[in-house]
Length: 190
Image (cartoon, rainbow, N blue to C red; front, side):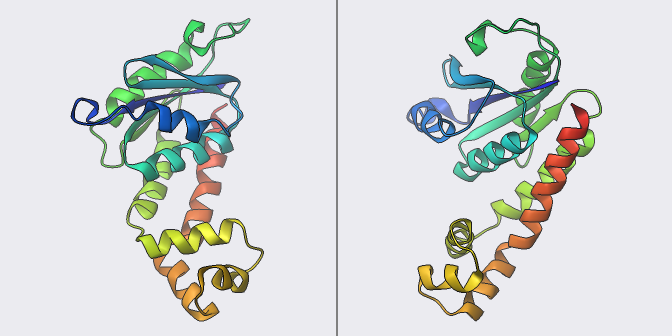
């Protein structure tokens, strides 16, 4: 089983091309087949790691620029070098998902066998992070490179108590638990 992410720029006619920035954001990931522009303002990649899918979904959703479709299923083998040259059930599911994502409140959808629970976990997770303030993002970002809340607080220049408050309001613990649940549910589907 594979995960295909089809990512379509929202309101692309009204703004600049966001594909280069997204390609830069996606460059640090480890897909089975690299993300490529497939048509106009759309990017597609092939992955085999549910954790990578969740991390990329969160990173892309944070930009508020993309509709994200995640397709789960088989792909034809042997795999072609370019993601655009591959075919299979996961690609068809990703196309359906990205079209559905365009009308989703969190602009993300998952398609494939028994994908409903994984999509629900992602919707809940994205609902938490989309409500996060800039101060909340600053605190959460500091935690990604810190061993403790006190260390993160020092990086941000606030007290440990203020850091704890920011993380609570930002839904940091809920995000971590939601990520673990989404990864688990996506992994169960493969």
